[in-house]
Length: 230
Ligand SMILES: *Cc1c(COP(=O)(O)O)cnc(C)c1O
Image: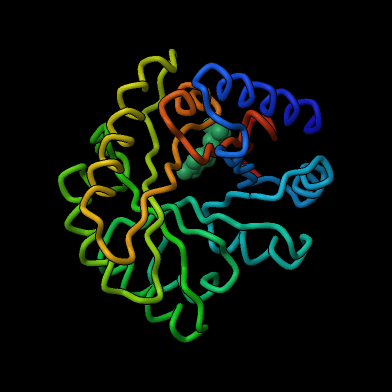
């Protein structure tokens, strides 16, 4: 099951890259394995998946020692400051930074572990009230502040687009995030890079790739529906 689904996602990514004149290797597929049992992650790993996305510190901590060492763990969910210390040396990237206070905590924990943590700023492009993330206007000022923190490396932006029936409805969101990243890159801020655009989920990753996504976060499309009852 996971093997077929992964192959199908892979093919759609490939086609979206071709449609938009992009190279396949410029798009990283993050397999979002939240709520899924370790056997599912292992199967995805056997099929070639190396980047896994989780949204809970507890779950990363449990799964981390059970998976091979070359897995890259991506923290994609809202992160509480008091939990940063448990994962700062385990994760390859935090996609969900949206405040200076959180960044300061990441900085001090990263310094303790002598690591430099790649992060993305989460932007709530569509300004949905239910979602975390910065407004478009808040993003550059926060990037400037975080650029001072030497154990943090801003590598780009992330957004969670609204839930929509037709992925075309989210094209403007992805375009807007891309535009914002180009604007910020043009400021040439020390310690701030904009080569990562984490956007697109199961329902809309092909449109996101057409609009410049360099990371897509696909859960349901690979592992099937999540059961939150468990
Ligand atoms: C759960 C989640 C995803 C994956 O969602 P699917 O629709 O299952 O692909 C992607 N990004 C974030 C931030 C998530 O929390």
